Length: 374
Image (tube, rainbow, N blue to C red; front, top):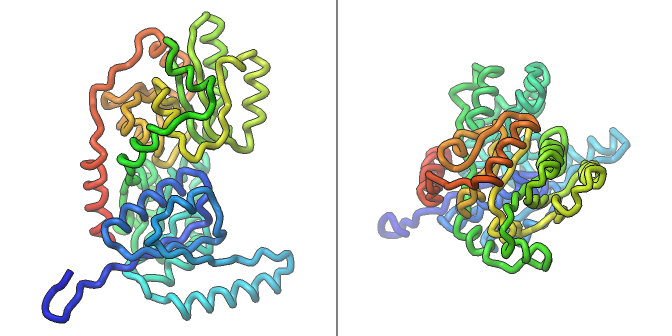
């Protein structure tokens, strides 16, 4: 594209720092965002503290990848010297080389450093309501953000309004810097991937049976995800002879806890553990309802995935639950009994979606916000 004779419009250079590209909500959001922006013509570089993760092969070939190694030696002196050398090298090579930079893994000290060096137009990307995450302890939230030098960023981006409001409550002086911007969604790719075949024959057969199938996708972390609420609700539903299935996609530190509870309640034929899935969307396709039992979320990417594939959602009152309450599912309190009632209602009567989701309009609104920032 030319502005005039001999004048070419330079592609804007964007920089994103994160820990790695392993399976997770933050990583999903980042890969979707950078691939989308790359197709729009932006020149993108991603810096990883560890060049690893299942999403590496999902990145557009147009995107530049660099690795920033942090030394974790037990020797404090050696560690400090190595990390100082790394910082100096990064400063010499990348200081203000980009039009926009972001620390996408909020907690990362290295990411905070790199983003603030790479561009004067820097952003800290925040994926949670940290006041809820720290159980209302404002002192801990303040210490967390001060540790990553939040005040030195030009923009502070939250993916949910709950996160934004909590942050401003603690840092009112940073209100003008703080922006709410939901995650982008690659609706076309999700629809295409949902058409892929399912490997497990017994799961394939579920689509042919006349029983409701619930799906939960996420990390197995009881403190946040509270999957015991679903397991306990299933126990009660089975005692009443309701016929249904629940699929758990994901794993984590509490997988064994969940498996033990399922065995204890003799629910092995009702709750099926499928482990991690790089492509979970065929399982969305054969499911009838997406279910979240979380105590807190940033912005649940699974909402968008369910919306795109036309699946109703049962969710606890986590960030942006209003998007579900508006004709796309049922919103419940954060307890087992409320989940049980909603699941029973769905088993008996189903749910008809009243508000169809248009991912192109949704993305266009987000891109407008991002372009103003970048």
